[in-house]
Length: 277
Ligand SMILES: Nc1ncnc2c1ncn2[C@@H]1O[C@H](COP(=O)(O)OP(=O)(O)OP(=O)(O)O)[C@@H](O)[C@H]1O
Image (cartoon, rainbow, N blue to C red; front, side):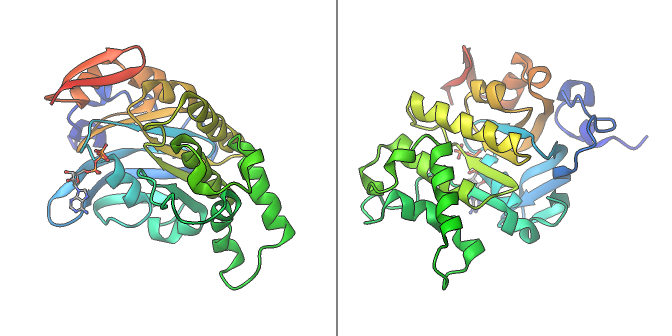
């Protein structure tokens, strides 16, 4: 018998938690299809045999230890790291072809806080792909920027210098920049790292708002509460896939322990704490 894609994962199909291994439950188009995909920077794949689907208007949490390959998967969705086996489809196209409709908020804040630029100017950067670099932003572009800032709870800070904001607020500005691009798919790499509770709440609200508008979200996180509060699906990763499916059914202590492999792991409330590496 030819093994199903799930049985090639470290856990069997039944264990993998893919509650949707049969036909999709929804008629909505797929935003993201992983079809036994392996991803590699060079010869040796960093990620192998990923398999699952995320539909439009849904969010998926990528959960796994440091070095599991979460950022690599996000880069593969942007077409920056090659798929060497299988297939990844983003918004019905190859990842590199879908870039116009995908927005990305990277893990580390790559914008120098000392760079003399206002919050509004940072968010306007998200519009340039649509406006073109040579045209001046229109009133409609400024309205988009204002709406994006409103969505992340920073409506009153448009004129402030970016560098004067707290780390959590800067993260929200970068999220607003991504929202202003009107993405159909938003990729967030560890957006909650080192972020205060108010910013965390604002980011979650913004994610839910985008989903309500039909956009899809991929978010890497160590925080299981994020998965429960804002994600329909989880993808448990540690070089292989240890589960992909509806959040409640997939996030079991057994699967989390398997995902975190050789690390001593504690589940404190909704957080995964790696106590020993
Ligand atoms: N540009 C690169 N070239 C070669 N290998 C890389 C490159 N970037 C990352 N890797 C390797 O790929 C593996 C997965 O790294 P990745 O950053 O995707 O993990 P992660 O799950 O995002 O971890 P973290 O939570 O620490 O950011 C690691 O072994 C890493 O060393």
